[in-house]
Each structure stands twice: as C-alpha cells, then as structure tokens.
Length: 283
Length: 292
Image 1 (tube, rainbow over the protein chains, first blue to last red):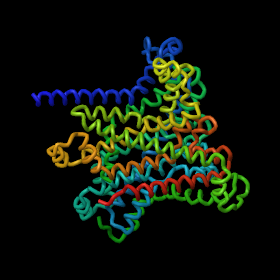
Image 2 (cartoon, helix red, strand yellow):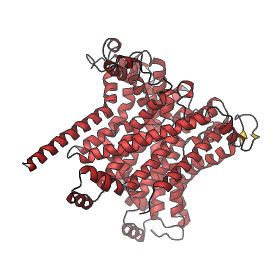
Image 3 (tube, rainbow over the protein chains, first blue to last red):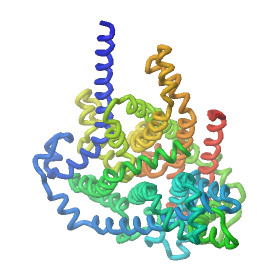
Image 4 (cartoon, rainbow over the protein chains, first blue to last red):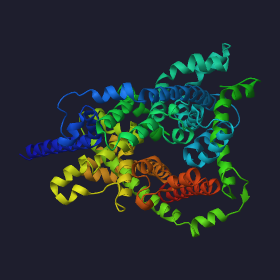
C-alpha cells in the first residue's frame, strides 16, 4: 500500500514537472511565435482583435511589401557579406593559432594562450573610441571593413579557446609520425588536423555566425550610410520609421531577420550547445 | 610536435595573422584609451593634457556618472539573480525530467540566438500601451488599473524592464552550462545520499550544488563581466529611460564620446568600466572561489 502511494506521488510529481517545463517553454518561445503570427495579420486585425488572437488567414501583404519595396533584402546581402568575411578569417587564423599553441613546441605557448584569453575579460567599449578615430584616419568608417575587422579580432579569444580545448586532446603520436614521414607542419594542419576537427569547426561556425548576424555595436558605430547597413541596423531603422504605426510590417521585418538564425539554430544547434558546454565545463 | 631549425618561422606563420589582428584591434586601443583619458580632446583640435582631472570630475562634478554606476550595479545584481539562479533552477528542472530533455533544452535556448535588436523590438511591442500590447491587455483583465503600466517610460520601471529582457535573453545560456555540470555529478554521491534517506531537495542543496560550486562561481564572474558592460539591450529598449533613469555606464560612455564628442572624457568612462569589471571579478573570486 505504501509503495503504491509512493508510486502515485512520484507520478503526480512527474506530471507536475512536465507542467512546469511546458510553462517555461511557453514563456521562452511564445514571443517568437507571437512575432511570427503577427506577420500574417492585416492592419485591421491589430486594431479590432486581441493581441493574442490568431490571424484570420495568411495575409501576405506585409511580406510582399518588405521583400519587394523595402531595403530589407539589401540589408540581408550586407549581413551575409559581413558574415562570410568574418567567419573565414576567424576560423582559419583562429584554428591555425590554436594548433600552434597546442601542438607546436615553442617557448611562450602558455603565455600566448593567456594573451588571447585576456580578450574575454575586455569590454569592447574600451576599444571603440580609439578604433573610431583610427578608422576615421584610414577612411574605414562608413565601410564594411570597419564592421568586419573588429568582429574578427573580438571573436579570436573565444574561438581560439574552444579550438585549443579540442586540439590539446589530439594524439601527438599521429602528428609526430606524419612529421617523420616528411610532412611539413602546415600539411599536418591542413591534411590531418582539419578533417579530425570537423565538428569543432561546425560548432564555431554556428556560434560565430550567429554572433555576427546579431552584431549591433560595431555596425552602429562604424557605418552611417543606409546602403551599408546590416540587418540589425536596418531593422532598427525600419521600426523607427514604421514601428508606431504599422505593426504588421514591423513584425514581418522582425520575423524575416530572425528567420535565418532560427534555421541555422535548428539544423546546427546541437553543435552550438555542445560548444557552450565544452567551453564552460571542461575549461 | 617537435620542430626543426625553422622553428620560429613555422610558429610565426601559424600565429601571426591572429596575433597581429588581435593586438592591433584589441590591445593597442586599450593603451590609446588610457592615454586619451588624461587629455581633454574633441577629436579635431589639439589635445590638452589634464592629468587625472577627467577621473576626478567623474566622481565630483558629474551628475550622470554616479547614477549610471548605481544603475549598473542594480542591473548586474538582477542579472546574477536571473541568469545564474533562474538558469540553475531551469537546469535542475531539465535534469529531473525523465524524457524529452534535449527538446526542452533546445527550446529554452532559443532567446539566446535572437539578436538584441529583434528581441527589444518584440518586447517593445509586448509592453506597448498604444495600441495595447500583450502584457497589459492580459494584466488589465486581472486588474483594470494595470491596463496602463508604463513598462518602458515609467522612471521606476524602465531599468527593471531592461534587466528583465537581458536576463530573459541569456538565462538559457547559463542553464545549458549548469545542466552539463549537473550531469557530471557522480552517481555514487547521489545514490549514497539516497540510501541515507535524503530527499531530492536535500540532494540538490547538499550534494549537487556544492559539487558544481566552481561552475556557479565561474558563471557568476561571466555574468558580472557581461552585465557591467551591458550596452545594447538597455539602450535599445529604453533609450536610457526618461531623465536617464535607466542609463548604464556603457551607454553613458557612448553618449559622451560619440554624441558630445568628448573623446577624452568618454575614454575616462571606458577605462572606469574596465577597472570596475576587473575589481568586481577579482573580489568576487577571492570571496567565493575555493581551491580544490
């Protein structure tokens, strides 16, 4: 009898846990669901119906406007350009540096790692004024270069940290024997190490890619003309113009700008979550 | 891997690009900021050496700096509560679910990958008054007086609203870290406590939390570091609030430098942010970190 009540209690407890988990789920996801459904509402629906009401039908007028008549596609292109120009050097140079720090024997390996890791503690705002003045002199303000370079630099600490955490567990014997067979260190890196590190490359590409897509401060500081704006800036301007009056178009724009992150996250999210835990728990 | 006689050439080839970009863009500017901070300079005219006057002025004659400092402390405390404590609670919730953990974990992490700009726009709409946003339309049904809670324009509320959105965005991140740490608690410890008749609550408080103590401290330091320099969410959501009632240090520094063109003074604020971050992180570690 006692065992029975224990079982009943634990079953009850378990259901309570799931109820709680679902409640949290709603809190964490509802704002984005709300954004998505609001993108398909007609202007009248925002006035006449409650905020949480579902749209009557799939009204596509908002999406048509944003895609065909606004600057949003242009901002997408800019953000994509920035993302490619940030990711390629960050992953390439970051993995090379981490490989050297972990696997090439030289004096000052530890020192170099600490030097890169120090960057994790530095608030980027402290670099903003000198960078702005220097870029001004080099005519890099109001160009995408000014948005790309700082992001590369500030991605290095985290990127090198995760790469180094992975590389230090690579078996030395394999690399040593390749060198004995006459492989140059660069060939070892390119032909042996890179294929083994495929997952960590994916993890960092996802994380750095999402950071980059969402980046605001550098884009806000180093671009001023409209044609160079990235999606975050474009979204801010668009909402500044239409936000108060046209909720449908506003939600559509928000929805479209977060859609790529959603897609990336739902396909590669497990790599991203693995990276988060690796970085924090092992390290 | 041992290297032959061309050791330094190889090392340089591998590390030079990252080292160069990182040094020029992260480290050199820190030095320049410290230099600018002892000058009075608007970026165009000549630099006037003023010594530590800028710093002195911050603490004595500046009406916005100390309030911004106070807001930043409140904001940071709220982030510790939301990101670390709620994050930890969520991790416990996840780890006590028998099934569907990966699904819930993936969904709870969603706000982390959304840009601050998009998140702020969404919350601005949720907290809106005209037309009535979601929050107030629901609250108003409970108590009609709550129809017009001014989340973003009330002096007493806007800092809290910004802190809420920032905590909401990042708590999933710390949940994931805590969850991984909880999975690392050895089963033997938990089993032994169970045999002694400990409840799951006792196990959580007396076995699991002490075991992951260092992860908790490390996460607190990460949150401290992130919140003391918080910029985009408070600025985008409240635009510093009415009468600067939600102005934090980083947006204040930005305003001094890029709106008022006081590069020297702005640099002094920037250097203060670094000093405050370092002091807080060090003190926090000293107090809570234990040697293994």
